[in-house]
Image 1: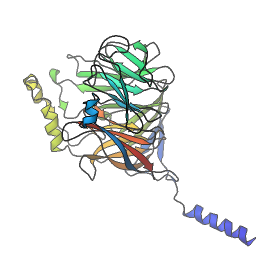
Image 2 (image 1 turned 90 degrees about the vertical axis):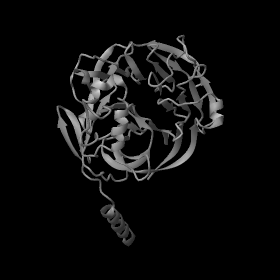
Image 3 (image 1 turned 135 degrees about the vertical axis):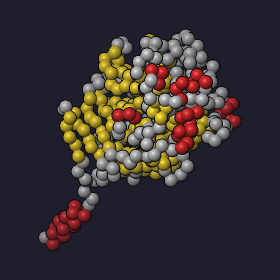
Image 4 (image 1 turned 45 degrees about the horizontal axis):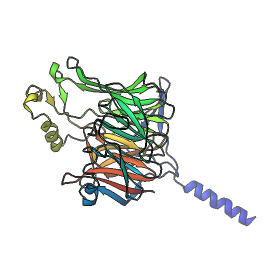
Length: 388
C-alpha cells in the first residue's frame, strides 16, 4: 500500500512539474482554420524545437577531383532521394547534365545530355531547368525551353517525357497524379509586368486552378517598384502544398493536392530595416542604360518583407528564413513551425539565397545547403540533423 501511494505521489509530482503545452490561438475564416502565431515560440510538451548539425560531407566545385568529373558548377535545383543519394544539375553540362552522388558523397554516375531528343535537356542553365525527386523516387526534370518534363530512374535510365505548355516551368509531379508548376505571364502594358501564377494541373496538364500568384509592379506604365524581390515561395511536403508571397505579409497558405485550401499560418514579426548592402545589390541589377527610365521609380520601404523564402522536412515541419541576421557571418534566423502550423522555435542557418529563393532542403534527417564561396565556386554541404 505504501509503495502504491508513493508511486501515485511520484507520478503526480511529474505530471504537475512537467512543462505544459501552451494554448495556440486559432480562428476560422470562411471555413478555413487560421493559426495565429505570436512573436515568441510556443512550448509544446514532448516536441523538440531546435537541432544541432554535424557535417557529413560536401560537394565542392572548387575541388579538382570534382572538376575532373565535369561538374564545374551546381545549379540552384538539386534534390535527394529516400536513400540519401544526391542529384545535381550541372548548368554548363553538354554531355553530362545530371550528376548523382551516393549518401556518403561519393560520385556514382552522370546522365542526360544537352539536346532536344528523348532524355535530352535543352537548357541546363538555371532557372530554365528544374530537378525534383518525385513520390515514386524517380528524377523529374522540367525543361522550360524543350517544353517537357523528363523522367529518369535512379540509375539514369530514361523513362518517359510529358509535354507541357510554352510558359510552364518548375514542375513537380504530385502523388495523386496532378502536377504543380509556375506559369510565366508577362505583359508590358499591364500594371504588373510579371503575373506568375502557381498553378495546379491534372495528369494531362490541363489547368485545374490557381493557388497563388507572384505580382511584380510594372514601372514602365508608371507603377512604383518597391526595392524587394517579390518572391513567391512554395513547397510540397507530406501531401500538402505550402505557398507564401512576400507582399502578402507573414502568411502561408496550405492546400491539399487537389487544391483545396486547408489552413492559413500567420505570425507576428519584428520589422527589419532595409540594409545598405541590400539596396546596393538591388540597384546593381538596374545599372544598364536600358533601365535609365526605371531607376527613378524604385523606392525602398522602411523595412524588409517578413520572410525571404522557406523549405520543409519530410516530417512536415516548416523552416522560414527571415531577414534577421544570425550570430555568424552569412547566417539568418529561420522560424520553425511544426506540422500543425505552430511556431515552436528558431534556428540560425547559413545558406545561399538570391532573388530566386532559398537553396536549402531537409530530408532523411539531413540538411542540404548550397552556398557560394568567396571564390565564386558553389559548394553543397550535407549535415546530419540532431533534434533536441
